[in-house]
Length: 145
Image (cartoon, rainbow, N blue to C red; front, side, top):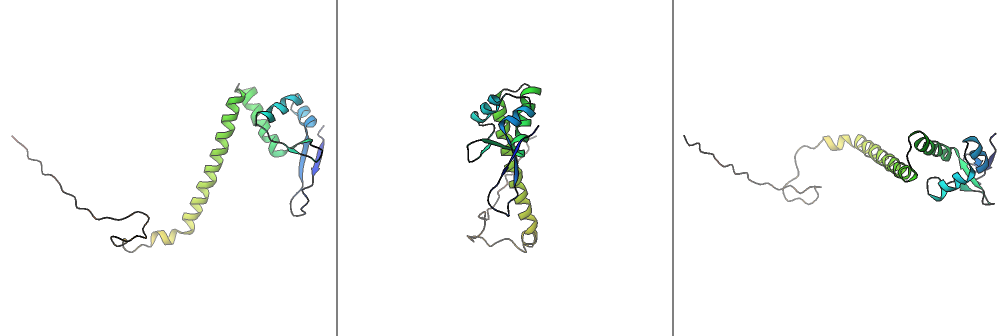
């Protein structure tokens, strides 16, 4: 059965997060506690610590552990591969968040971006991309028959 410890952050505004000890997590997932310690040593899991230095696993840690176990048990991925996959997922999440921020910026500034009446004058320095007028010379091709 689960044993959980309340992680009192000290701020009444913050929700108390449920945490689980290493023995409870190991039992729930049919793992040896040394396996969880190894995942921590390899940087795959980062449980928080209590004042007595006991490892405390949150629901987020458990979701990450489930992904690690799925990759290793079901797909046969080794720990180096798991690390690469987890790092790529984190980068993809960061890119998604950045894209969403950019999209919100475009939505909030749509009127500004679509109401340009005329292009900036040549030689102005406040443009993002300098505008230079150039002449295009076309070469006439002569066909020889």
